[in-house]
Amino acid sequence: MFESNVDNCLSDFNRSMETEGYQAGCPWPGVKGIYNNLKICVDDWAKVSWCQGQGSLIDKIFLKVHQKYFRQCGQVQDPPLVTVVMLIAPVVIATLLMPALCVKLAPSDTSL
Image (cartoon, rainbow, N blue to C red; front, side, top):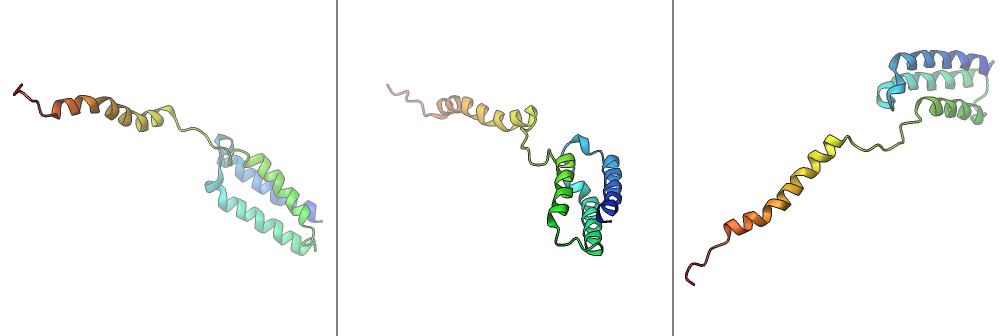
């Protein structure tokens, strides 16, 4: 009973995730409501079917969900090259221009 009803919860969740386009990357903040609905649905069927103590069944369901939809969420990705250049360029330019600025501002001693 529990598994067949949870399959209904999962099919609703899967349809919702397909419309959200989860393949593009980590979908997490945008699908939080959908995920919460799945959690509530699974928890409700666990209560009704007396499977609350069977945490491993519920854990297996959510492990499969995380492996399919949230696999990319924990991966750290490098920022785009443009962002890196924009962050590094001012430091490099300032470092290269500093000696010229110091020479220009140094007092010249013409009394020799």
